[in-house]
Image 1 (cartoon, rainbow, N blue to C red):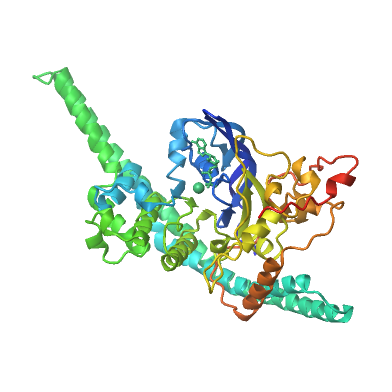
Image 2: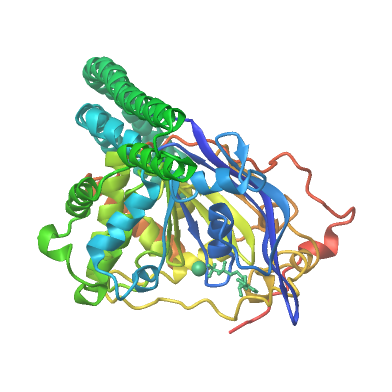
Length: 538
Ligand SMILES: Nc1ncnc2c1ncn2[C@@H]1O[C@H](COP(=O)(O)OP(=O)(O)O)[C@@H](O)[C@H]1O
Ligand SMILES: [Mg+2]
C-alpha cells in the first residue's frame, strides 16, 4: 500500500576515494540508492565495505583526505555535494540526523546530559519552528497514528500471503497437481486480501481524511499565530530603533558610541525573542527524554554520561538527534556496542520513533540478523559496491548473490547465538580493488569471468537486482547453500505461524536508480568464462 512514493534522498553513482601514503583507497565505488519517505533502507555488509563512508558523505563529514570522485547526493532536488556551506549546515543535523555506533564518542564526558541536549537545541534555536511544531503536534500525531494503525493491520495480513507465495516458489513439488492446488489457494487468498485491503483502507481513510482536514486547519492557525508573534517582535524592534535614532538626532549627550551600544542591545533583544529560552529548551529536552524512554528525566537531566548504561546513553544520543526534528535519520551500527537484550530495545525504540515522527531511515549494520525487523528494503554492500538490493522479503527469502548467501549463513542462530558459518577469507585491500566481482576470491561459486569482468545488475524482479554472473543465462545453475535454504524454510514456517508483525512502515517500494537496462559488458565467446573455478578458500 503506497502511503508514500515520495523520494527524499537519492545517492547516484557515488565514488569516494581516500588519499593515503600507501596509495588511493577506493572506499565507495559507484554506489546508488534512493530513500522514500517513511521507509527504512538497511545497508548491510562486513566491516570495511564502505557503509560508514557512504553515510558520512551524506552528512558531509568525511575525513580530510577524502576525495569525492564522482556522483551526487540529492536531497529534495538539491545536490548536497554542491550546495553552499551555509545551506549544507541547515540540512545536516537539522533535516538529516545521525546516530553513531559508539554513544560515548558522541557525548561529552564532562558535560551534564541535560546541557548536551539543550545545547543542541539552543544551537538549532528556531523558536518559531518550535512554536509551530508544538501547536500542531497533537493533531499531527492523531493523523499519523491512524495511518500507522491502518498499515499495521494491512501489513500483518499481507505478510502471511507473502510467506505463502515465497513458500510455493521455494518448494520442490513432486507433481504439477500439488503445485497447481497451492497456486489456486494463493490466488484465492490474494483476492481475499485485495478485498480486505480495500475495506480496511475505506474504514481508516475516512477517519484519516477528517483528521487531515483538522490538521490542515490547525496548521493554518499555527502559521497565523507564529507570523503574528514574529510581527509583534519586529514591530517592537522597529519602534525601539526609531526611539534611539531620535535620541541620537536630538543629541543631549547621546553620542555615536552610546547609539552604537543601544543599537546592539536592541538587536540582541530582538534575536533573543526569536530564540528558544533556556527554560523552553529544558522543557522540551525533558519531553524528548521521556519520548526516548529515559525514566526519571528530571533527575537524569542533571547527570553525566558515565552515570548512564550503554543503552541509556544511546537513547540520549537519539534524543539529541531528535531535537532538530529531522526528516531523515541515519543510524550507523547503533546497537553494535550493546548487548543483545538492550540491542532489541533500541531497535524497537528506533522503529517506534520512526513511525511516530514519520521519519525516513537509513539503517546501517554488519549483521543481517538485525535487519529482519527493521527493513523495508535492503542493500547489500561489498568492497565499496552494492552487490544486491531488494525488498526485505526478497533479500531474506530469495537471495541471489553469493555474498548475500554468505551473510545469511553467518547470522547467529537464535537459539545457540553462535555463528553458523563464518565467511571464509578476508575482504580485499581497497587500494587495489580486484577486477570483476570483488567477492570472487572468497566464493566457492566463482567462475572465471568473476575474476575479470564486473557483473552488471541482473534484474530479478522490479524491485530486486543482483550483480552476480550466476544470473547470466550462460552460467551453470547453482543452488544456494543448504544452510540458507533451510533457514528460509524455517523462517517461512515461522512467518506463517506468527501473524504478529511489528513493522508499520509501508512496504511498497520504488526501484532504485541504478541502470538496470545497462547491457552487461559481456565477452563475445563466453565459453571458458562461465566455468566454475571452485577454489576452496577455507
Ligand atoms: N580517512 C580514511 N583514510 C583512508 N581510508 C579510509 C578512511 N576512512 C575510511 N577508509 C577506508 O574506507 C573503507 C570503507 O570504510 P568504512 O565505510 O568505514 O567501512 P564500514 O563498512 O565498516 O563502515 C575501508 O577500507 C576503510 O579502511
Ligand atoms: Mg562503519
